[in-house]
Length: 272
Image (cartoon, rainbow, N blue to C red; front, side, top):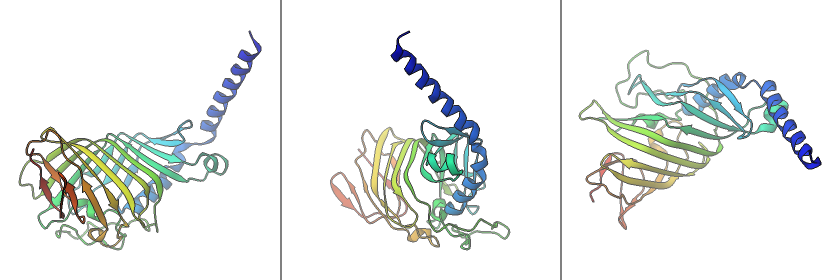
């Protein structure tokens, strides 16, 4: 065997040994309670993760399941469920000091349940709300629905948030018509922070065989009144849509078909 081939084999062997050693040294599941607590406090929702494993090459912790609870004033079912949740972490402090520094989030093929109450409130409006602010967003809170939560963090900041191939179900409360379903929803956010603006991009397939894209700025998130969080967006043109519905949200204005339109919380209609 040639000398260079032996060197490559030795390097490959050392690389594999290093990965195995790191995975044996770092027990990923020991970080699960800390991650659940941090995300629950930041979102103002109960967050549960499945078993964690360390993906050394991608520099991430991978959870087999992710469950984010809904606002109890809207539904007892989860707001979001996913089979895989990738949490980007800084490997050096994780390995050397067992310290957890979050860098990014990637959620694969989740189902997201969005509900709009008759008074115009949305179930996602209370995300990020401080634990001390538990007033019912839908106006029908009952005694005993408020639970003790972990102290809210001052901020949660990561470089990237990616949601891929999501299925979004949009319903009303009380139910007046069958829910609208949006497939293959993709959302990306960069320089995500609760205390500052961050760019947000969303694209989705419409129920009537169309396509819609939204880009804009979101934040900072108002930790006491979610409706007061700043939002500005541009709505891209749809393609192949025939009377498809799109979900609206509070913003300054949108651009559709080359013309600017004011928009607010509610639903919009597109016709091609």
